[in-house]
Length: 423
Image (tube, rainbow, N blue to C red; front, side, top):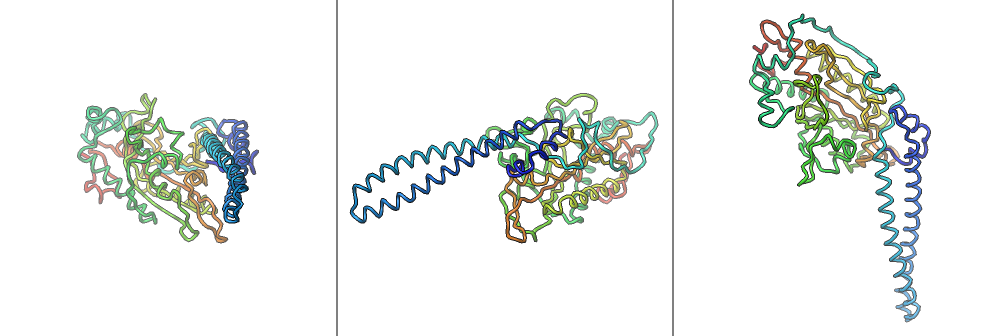
């Protein structure tokens, strides 16, 4: 979430920045500043009351020692009133702080100045494109047809076991999944990321820490009895490793990678664009997460983008990178680049990765700080990226590499799959 001090010092800048998201935050930002002013006033009065109470308590003890019992009793009556006042002020302060946090949770991150204005994905800016789109002719099969023909993914069995959006990977399809996971992890580790294996369930504090709550509550699977949530991405538990931590400058960069299944309700998703692997409720993804010094976070973002490029190039998949416009930008992100691979049979681009800089937005919620060279505590910057999400990568691999002899496996994956062709 945004810092109140930043909003106060850069009010017009914040308003103009958030207008890129097609919202006018002026009224709610004013409410935030009013609520913070009220909080400070109550806090000052509360501190003064406590100070006076402590002073009186010492005086009472001294008066009893001096035998001034009557004076001590008078002060005791005053202290009772002060205690009641202090209790009332503490309740008012807690309520005001709750109101302030509730208002702050409604405000998304301020877009980076380079984020283009726009309403939706149609206004995103293509910044890079690589590879030739294969021409498979009129008889090319979509991946869901190939999956059935080669018996590698069973969508109907997934429906039987669980429901739509929970496919079963079989035979060479299961081995391809495992190969991609290991390939991505190995490449990430080679690039300096430490491999982690986080829990697949998170508590409420973790959801609030990275911004899934309250913004995306309807998209998450909630286990009400235990008040736990199935993770939508490894970003959430991995970034929360550092919640309530104070790092030092020498700790940077913090670089983690993790494989997890991901769970998303995807409420309201329907139509041809979600067929097959295009949109699932459970899918596999390898994530990279970085905690950075604020002065280096955009250099780190560029490094992450370059790293994801190398993964797709190694898989020989035509892809493009788009910079998200304000209207398509995620709630917590200041700047996001999406990677999209070309689907030769569906003849459209499929998103396989988002690489984002959240600046201090998540860190403020997480209380993730570091001590600078002057020993001053400052908020760190957090970043994350998919490296990579598997379903649409698999879809593109199957479609783009189909032939009469079978489906060719890219050379970099053969040591992991143990076969060169799905047949």
